[in-house]
Length: 54
Image 1 (tube, rainbow, N blue to C red):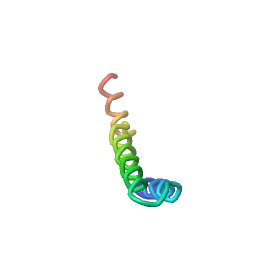
Image 2: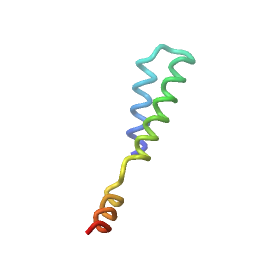
Image 3: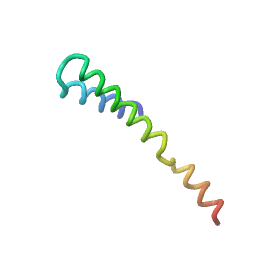
Image 4: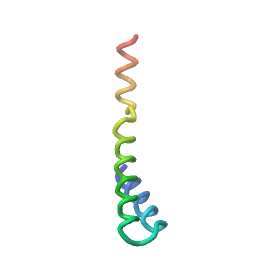
């Protein structure tokens, strides 16, 4: 899971211009990716939600 984030971050850093601008963009993108990952429901969470409804 973390490897996926790391590789995405590396791609973004390589494609952006060198300097602080790329650092800022990659760190912003990293935090957005992390927020998406944290807000996405896990299969376990979906299973318990389903069990509660049934």
